[in-house]
Amino acid sequence: MAVLAINGGDKVRTKGWPSWPIWDEREIKAVEDTVRSGRWGRIGENTQTEKFEQVFAEYQDAKYGIAVTSGTAALTIALKAVGVDIGDEVIVPPYTFIASATSILQNNAVPIFVDIELETRNIDPDAIEAAITPRTTAIMPVHFSGRACDMERILEIAKRHDLAIVEDAAHCWGATWNDRKLGAVGDIGGISFQASKHLNCGEGGIILTNDEELAAKAFSFHHIGRLPGRPFYEHHFIGWNFRITEFQSAVLLAQFERLEDQTQRRHENGLYLDEKLDQIDGLRALRRDPFMTRIARHAFCLLYDEETVGVPREKFMAAVSAEGVGCGGGYPHPLYKNPLFTEKRFGRITEMVEYPDYADMYLPNCEKICDIVVWLGQTMLLGTREDMDDIVAAFEKVAENVDELR
Ligand SMILES: Cc1ncc(COP(=O)(O)O)c(C=O)c1O
Image: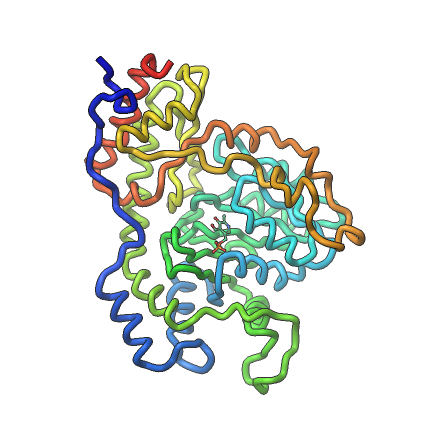
């Protein structure tokens, strides 16, 4: 008789998982109060947006925060603030969300993809160093799923080559590198508050920096080139209207009250799962370097070895999902495999700027990780220790009965 749920056996888990977003009367009141206040946009003094910027920047160990309409907008502005311009090369990993690269393209600059480390899934500092040319102006480390990159090495490389560091800290709400929060460890960085994110207002983002001049530029760029204290219809730079609304900031302030507890819970559950799942033959936890002092775990990731387990990853994941522990494979391919890159659909800028031949690109670790990683959603990590044991039990059960999948 079949044991695995995918073949008709009993499921390990019949209960659901925490849904997302998590909210209560605080969010309702925050939005209602904002409606009643009649103050719906951020222009002016003493706004909720200003309050949120101060609270969140301080939480992230940054002096300045500029809230914007998305993480993509944050990165686009951050690059412009450090001076990235037409034809400049910006070094970025290809295992990330498209916005890490399109924010570079939006500044008419050139994404130079370099490989990641297989064990940490983060950008490889040696690969950064090898990719630097006279056209390089910035490095964009991506702390994917809130796992800190090796910032000590990246800071040293940037200093030696006089390069800016723009951190894609999109997933770094509360995550730390050597006990310091991320986003303003380099020159400037961006975080996302999109609906799936741990701090969420539907869509939104923030730029973080410790540099007063960069903060002033970023503020102006998100506010159509205006300058504080200058006339309203005086515009100094090319900018965007990337201002966030007061509704979003009100929701963020309410959501923020839960962030620290939730972050610590995901972190502790993540460590527990790493330890337990790593003991199953053919599954491996990502390497946790000592500087990854708190991991936000936007996605919980494992490495899968098909040869040891004996069945393709997709079959294994389907069987674990059928046990009531939904999991998936994440990004199907490196960023450079998207038609945007293989066909260089960047517009007429390609007549002026030289781009790498993305269609011929092959970065082995990134290619491999797309085939071997297993992702679990962040809300699962909000569960109790018993919930984590269900996750472990589902993986163990499938691993022990893998013959049923052949
Ligand atoms: C790594 C990374 N960078 C940037 C972004 C862009 O954020 P947003 O969706 O808020 O524009 C995301 C969003 O998913 C992301 O995952």
